[in-house]
Amino acid sequence: MSARVNLLHLALVPITIVWMVPLVLVLGLALKPTNDPSTFFFGILPVNPSLSNFELVFEQNPIFRYLLNSALIAVPSVLLVVFLGAMAAYALALLDVPLKALIFGVLTLALVLPMSSIVVATFQVLQLLGLYDTTLGVSLVYTAIGLPFGIIVIRTSFLAVPSETRDAAVMDGANKWQMFWRVYLPLARPSIAVVVIWQLMLSWNDFLLPLVALVDKNIKPLTLIPLVYRGEHFTQVGALFAILIVVSIPIIITFLFAQKYLVNGLAGAVK
Image (tube, rainbow, N blue to C red; front, side, top):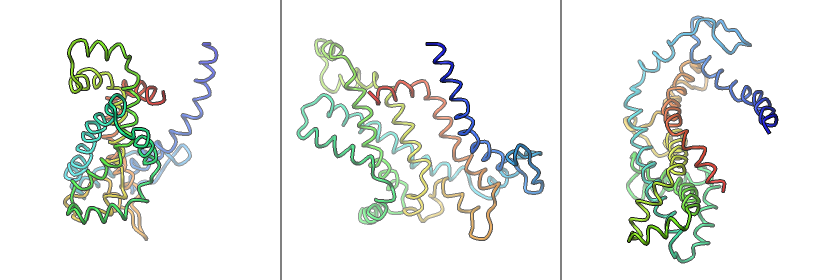
C-alpha cells in the first residue's frame, strides 16, 4: 500500500511542476523591472527582481478604496449564501417540502449556467429594481448565482448526519430551529468552508459582471484595475501582473485559514 502511495506522489511531481510554471511566470513578470529586462531560467525569472511594479500600481491607483469596494461586494454575498443556503439545505434535506425533487433538479441545472448567458437579463433586472451601478446590486447577483452550489453542498453534509444525533436532539426537546442552529450547522462546518471559499472566489475574482453593472469609478472593485494597464497598442506587463497578484492575495489568505476544513468538506460533497 505504501509503495502505491509513493508511486502516486512521484507521479504527481511533474503535474505539480506544470501547474506551478504559470504561477512562477506571473510572479517573475511582476518582479521584473522595466529598466532591466534581463532574465534567466528560460526567460521566466528576472535577474534583478524588484518591487517597482507593485509600487507603481499603488502610486497610480487608490488600491485600498478598490479593496474596500471588493469587500463590500464579496463579504455580503458570502454571508447570504451561507445563511440562506444552509436554511434551504436544511429544508430540502430534513423537512417535508413539496416538489423537493424538482427543486433540487432546478438547482443542479443552475450550476451549469455560465455568467455570460445571464449578463443581459441581469443588467435589465438591476435597472428595473434601481440597483444598477450599486455594490448592493452586484452582491445580490453573486448571491443568486452562488446559492445553488451552497445549497447542494450543505445539504449533502446535513444528509450525512446520523439519525441517532437527530433523535437525541428531539428527545432533549429541541425544536426545528434549535436543531438547525445547534446541531446541524456546527456539524456542517467543513462544507460551509467549501462554500465560503467557492463564493469568495466567485464574487472576488469575477470581471465580467462589475464591468457591465458598475459605471461609477468610486465603487469599482479591484478586479477592474487591470484594464488600466492593458491597452490596444501598449500594455504595461509588469504592472498588469503585479495587480493580478494583489487581487489574488485575499483569496490565498482565506484558503490558508480554511484549508483544514476544505478536504473534509469536499469529501462530504462528493458523497
